[in-house]
Image (tube, rainbow over all chains, first blue to last red; front, side, top):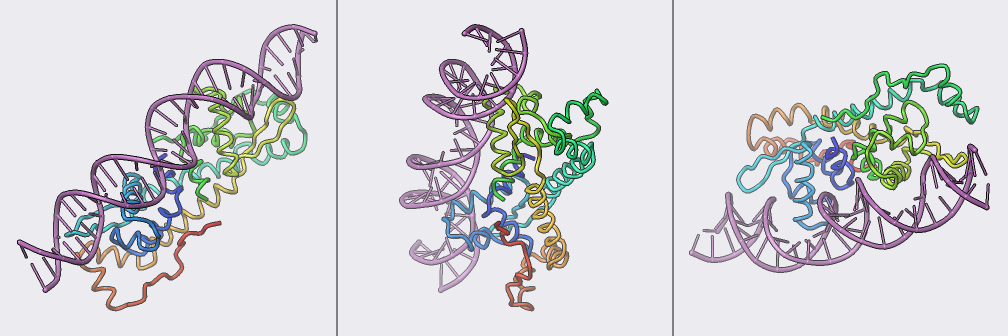
Length: 126
Length: 126
DNA sequence: CTGATGGTTAACCATATGGTGAACTATAAG
DNA sequence: CTTATAGTTCACCATATGGTTAACCATCAG
């Protein structure tokens, strides 16, 4: 999971993924839009590959790459889950209290001594 | 955008965000579940803050932090958009051809010389 | 065989990251 | 005033990242 988000944290790599959405491409094609050296392209591709976002298939001397959306889906799922959890939980209530009375959180907790960890993501390490 | 994904690329930070989903917390509370030093916690919080995912409000000597889901939503939007784009585009077709005939991509392009960049994400730098 | 092309590897550089311990600031409590 | 608590800043370390150039491997074309 870490490596997926890390791979997505670079604009060049995100651009390469966007390119791969349109169909498979060679390493050269992937790097063409960017004014960086070939080793740099090679490194970016390997980062994507190690994150499982890109799959490589040597065909003669060219490496044909295609996208594997699965890890990105996982990352997206984490985000969605987290956001959903933020919205409900004691969400609107807690935020209302917190925005209104300064010490609301503590006084509110008096009514519910439970640490309320109902079903939060809490590190879905896979 | 880079910094948001980078901030999400660390399990500790993701855990802190999950914690923040349950309501605001102090720096100490955020770092409590992890066996790391206080400066380390401080750094993680600052990373989240610079990514816009966390907002800080000094209240006496404690820093009360709350989550701001906006940047995460943007990141999620990029992922969803990319995935949606992967699914349609010349998606299923291209993948079918690519999985069947080795040189399918080139021969298929004969019918559509356009570089077909219809509406892909292509770096939604903001 | 020779050469051009597609990629990788190796060595290197600058900067960032995640961590530490020690010292410091500032507020709260005695 | 004194002490404890919450956090930060500082100096440092190890490792990773993004980039370079130069040299190399492998394949396709003459």
